[in-house]
Image (cartoon, rainbow, N blue to C red; front, side, top):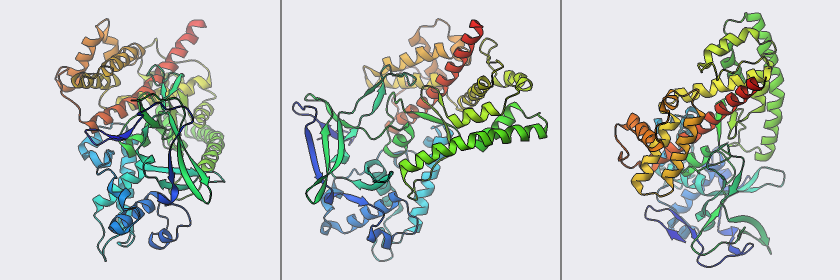
Length: 489
């Protein structure tokens, strides 16, 4: 095990490890657990308390018991600071996230913290008499729980038991990465090299960590935290995986919002009777598709209070658009002629890039392009500017690989966004490093010696640029497909 200068921890191989080697066994009697029939939590916690609040309260009670608690040694080695946004970012820095659903997720989590703290009794949180631990202490416990908890599958689907497991919670994350570093690359490479399983050993249960590949001395041992978008990693762990093929962007919170936006954007002048007919039909066609997807999600997650199923409509890396959204946007437009002119005006893109075919499915993609462009233009900085700032930061740190990665991003998106980004279009044949320097100056007024980003702010920029990559990839893919269709026709 190692601990870095800034407090990060992890495991390194100190000898050759073979695939299948068992590296660690931890009896689950040593773990903090949360489960549905926990009598102590049922007695102390308020009705409907989420699992994270129950487990955080249990952790605080153990800490309050001091050395008399069997968990005392474990509580003493927990990190003093979790680098999650709620712990490390000021309110002003949170605004730099730019991606509105991300800011809303932070607001929602902040509300959960305040509501849960006020709803918990002093006894539930391990307080002395009527005096609760501080709200900051509760926030720390919640950050620890969200960043270190394992969930074991229930027999009927979903999560049965959540656990804080000593030692195992010190493995760092390694997940799928795209081979090229571009989020729309279909070739993925797993970076994890160990896995965990819960197994029965006699009358006891253990968490067993096993190598999934050969590992040479000096390499870090990495455990996959799950195939998920960057939102969870950023919100609860404070880092952003590079080249995460599971990244996604929320386009709309639900179908009703999507269709309201579509009407306002493309059909505001449509007669009310026609609009009601078309949009009601579209909602009716898309709703069963979404409900089917939510049913599958519900089965996977289980039915505990904190596992509310979302109706958000997402765009995933690689240009994969939510099926229910595509159905709604296609069905609303079976007679499209009266919307064509509005689409041309709203998209605000060059004539060569305009996507105007008679196919209803193509109009659905047009609408997605418009939504993506609207979200990109609502953010104060561009993808190219963010990439340039990260390039300059890597150069200032003496990072050997980072500058190349971000220059590659700048080169790729300068080409891909020619039709929709004025700065990219004007760059012409400007050398890539000179272009990157120009972008940095446009944001900070400084050159490549702009200074280092703080750790938390670097994560903020990495988080928002990944969202912009997903949006930009979808725009470029749809426009290029439309251009190819016109040229072949």
